[in-house]
Amino acid sequence: MTTATEVPTIWNQIAESMYLRDSPTADIKLSELSSFSFARLQITEGLPDVTRPVVEESGYIVALQLKAIPYVELFLGKKKVSSGYYPTGAVGVISLQDEPACFLPNPFDALTVHVTQAALDEIAYAHRAPYADQLVWPYGTVDPVVHHLGQTLLSSLEHPLHTSKIFINHVLHALNCHFVYSYGGVRLSTPQLRGGLSSLQIRRATEFLEAHLDGNIVLQQVAEACELSVSHFARAFKQTFHKPPYKWLTERRVDRAKDLMTNTQLPLADIATQCGFADQSALNHFFKRTHGVTPGLWRRRTTRGRDNQCSSSDGDASTYQELQSRLKNKVHPALNS
Image 1 (spheres, helix red, strand yellow):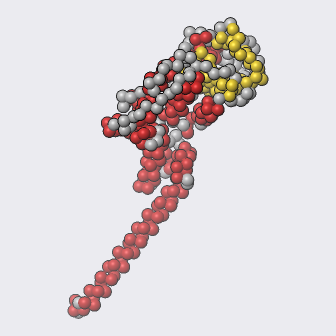
Image 2 (cartoon, one colour; image 1 turned 120 degrees about the vertical axis):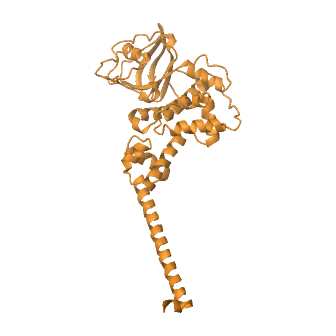
Image 3 (spheres, one colour; image 1 turned 180 degrees about the vertical axis):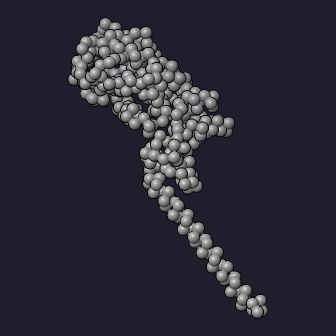
């Protein structure tokens, strides 16, 4: 871990217990976009010994194998609970209260997510469902949902400038819903919302999002501005606008860029910055995904069309004036004498 920002104790414990700190064969990438709630752990050589137990921590670690592991042993306390081959896409759910430890004699590459009990309880409360007292998933079994969403989290680690906090928060929320339902055995209902957000909540949410076009906020902040839980807010927002908050925010950034490209001579790099994009490359990426062309090409077409329209309008005005002059001479020839 090379980040200068203070990280939660859990990741320091994991690094210490797995002999990863200062190891030349280990690489840990933590997500600063999500308050360090997930990380990628890579080791090019196996661990020298059974890891030390992680103690005095709560919640769960959900590990998604990005590459197959030839052999792994997992212990809870002093009891071995799993051993053998884990394929790519395999998932392990580990309760930190059970003081987990493992033996990994081979190289491994895993995406690990720290799931708090508070996040699980908030989802159950929002859906008026029983709390998930325990997450259970067969060790080493592939979970396509976690594998799919995990690729999005992985991409955010590799390309953080092209990812916003509010989007990552949305993905993590979806994962937690999946954990409550599939791992916690809780059937989630879909509460009927009365018309989505109120007019006051719409104003608060849109003003808050407009003030953070760069997306450097988490979903909880917007929900709190509307005095709603995250789950309630996310559903109500989508019911109101027919799209999730992160998509609404991206579209507003693109709309703002179009306005600046049409009405100013600012370079695209400056426009990208003013609209909350990390750089011009990020603007190109999202603009092309929305409109099918690069912002530079869109600007040239728009400007050329506007110039042609202005030229046509000028020509029509000249023709009209000439016609008026001819009619005047024909009807009132004495005016020219």
